[in-house]
Amino acid sequence: MQDAITAVINSSDVQGKYLDSSALEKLKGYFQTGELRVRAATAISANAATIVKEAVAKALLYSDITRPGGNMYTTRRYAACIRDLDYYLRYSTYAMLAGDPSILDERVLNGLKETYNSLGVPVSATVQAIQAMKEVTASLVGADAGKEMGVYFDYICSGLS
Ligand SMILES: CCC1=C(C)/C(=C/C2=NC(=C\c3[nH]c(/C=C4\NC(=O)[C@H](C)[C@H]4CC)c(C)c3CCC(=O)O)/C(CCC(=O)O)=C2C)NC1=O
Image 1 (cartoon, helix red, strand yellow):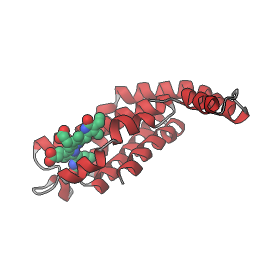
Image 2 (image 1 turned 120 degrees about the vertical axis):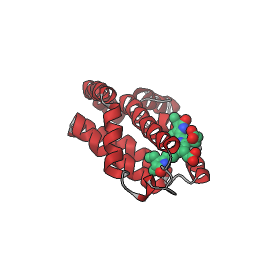
Image 3 (image 1 turned 90 degrees about the vertical axis):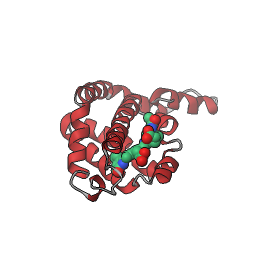
Image 4 (image 1 turned 180 degrees about the vertical axis):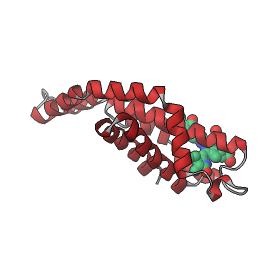
């Protein structure tokens, strides 16, 4: 797992240089948004179950997916879907705190598309649910932090597609 600081340092180290002005600007941006990130993570963790529930209501309920034959039909599969959304929310929050998406590659996306395809989990409905979580989260944490979280929700969506 990498974060905004190690990413910048590693890339300077590879070139055997001190941090140049663009690297320092990146670090400055990260430090300046530190409090915003921590505040957003606090609000998200206190409201995680509600965020997931509202996203499910927005994107998935009363569609064919929750009816017999749909991938969320049966409580076992419904619960697996809710659990997956909670993973996406939690890991996006970690990535937002780190300011770097590498944790998503390592712990979430690795092999996920193949697993979904082999189980018949619909990717497009999953992407819609993640987009709904993005909206619900932004309305909770505000536009600036919402935009930052959106980077990582979108990262998961493009990794799945
Ligand atoms: C932390 C990293 C991590 C991730 C991301 C993860 C995902 C994940 N989701 C799974 C299943 C599943 N995922 C879903 C999800 C959905 N079905 C829908 O129709 C909806 C659109 C969608 C929710 C948005 C469902 C229903 C299953 C069960 C499928 C089945 O067994 O038939 C499985 C197969 C094993 C299992 O059932 O637990 C994995 C590995 N596991 C992990 O350890």
